[in-house]
Length: 249
Image (tube, rainbow, N blue to C red):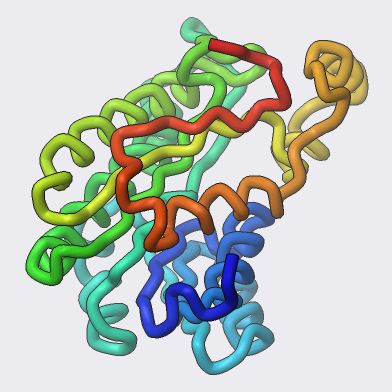
C-alpha cells in the first residue's frame, strides 16, 4: 500500500484500545488518516492517542447506547470532520452456550457486537452519501458460519447478524459510492486466545488450523487497510474469511 493513499480521510475505529483495533489504527495512520480512537477503556485510549501523535484523538463512550453513540459521533465530526471510514471492530466474547446464557448476557453481547455497529453506521451514512465516498468495515467472525467452535451462542448470533447488517448496508449504499464489507477472522492473537481459552483448547485449535498457527493482529489490520483503500471501491457486500484454512467454502 502506498503511504498516504488515504491522506486526509477521517477514520473512526471502535475497540481501538484492543490488540486488533490498535493494529488497524497504526496502519490507517500510515496511510494518512486522521483517526478517532473509540473505546470504553478511557485511560488506555487516551494514553494511546497521546503516543500515536496529533492525528489520533481519543473518544470514550458506550457504543451500545444509541444516545451515547450519537453524541460521540457528533463530537468526532466536530473535532476531525465527517467520518469517511467506519471500522466497527469493538466486541466482547461469551463462551456460554444457549442454556447457560441469561437475558443480561444476551443483551450485553448483542449490544456491544451488533447494536453499536448499527448505531454508528446510521450516524456516518448521511455525510458519506452526500460526498459519494465511504467505507464501512465490520468485524464478524468464523463463529457466524460455524455456530461457534469455542464461542458461545450470543457471540455467534451477534457475529452472524453483523454479517447480515453488512449485506443490507452494502445493498442500500452501493448507488451512493459507499461500500460495506466485513472480515471474518478466526483466532487472532488477542486476550480472547491467550486468556479466555485454556492450553488444551489452544493446542487442539492449532492442530485443526491447516496453516498451523494463530492469526497475527497485523494480518487482520492489513485486510481492513485494503478494504478502506480507493482501489477496493468495486468490492461491497463481501465477508472475507481470515482463518488459516480452518473453514473453506
